[in-house]
Amino acid sequence: MNVCIDVGNTTTAIGIYQDDKLIHRTSYNTDAKRTEDEYVNLFQNAFENMKVSFGSIERIIFSSVVPSLNRPLMSALKSLIHVEILTISPGIKTNLILKVDNPNEIGNDLIADLVSTKEKYGYPALIIDLGTASKILLLDKNGAFTSCLIMPGLSLSAESLTKKAALLPEVSLEAPKTVLAKNTIHAMNAGIVYGHADMIMGLINRYEKEIGYPCKHILTGGASIYLRDIFDESYIYDRDLNLNGLNILLKKNEVKL
Image (cartoon, rainbow, N blue to C red):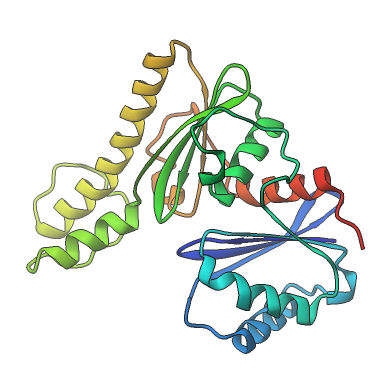
């Protein structure tokens, strides 16, 4: 079995793969205050709930965009699972062509998205990854990663509005049936959700106009569940795009016992 771990700013996802199939998936809120011992307990409970024994694990890949958590998480994993852990770092085999100013700036999560999209969907493609930050990645017609946009994510936008405006309440991120708002909560919910969706669609249109050709639209990330029904059928929803990319990277780099 392969274990793929993706540590995001808001959520950490764990995927268990057997014969290239995702057989178990779980997630928990990312918390920088947890200690190594707390992560040991968390992993023990998580793997027990998934009915996966540590002895059955052959390979692990670890991806993180929260550097302060890398040491406690890696130490907890190494104390429980005695196999080599692959991390995404310079020199790892990705089969990606990176035509950006500084390839070392590319986040681990984005590398996994790109690898997964290139292998599963091909190119040209625009990947919309909606998490703590919303990202749009371009795989051009030659299969090269050439551009990325980064914006405040859906939940971050909502939290910022609530914190900075004293009279505005917290709201859900569920899309209302109409934008014709008649009260404060409806006004906020419609503005935040539909506003974010229209921003994404507007940027996609701007991208395709500037590059001069249409692309496949791949939608992923934790916040995408709130917007996926707003987008038209050209947007392909893939919840596990990132985890699948991590598993592909394990295969490409042949990490063994």
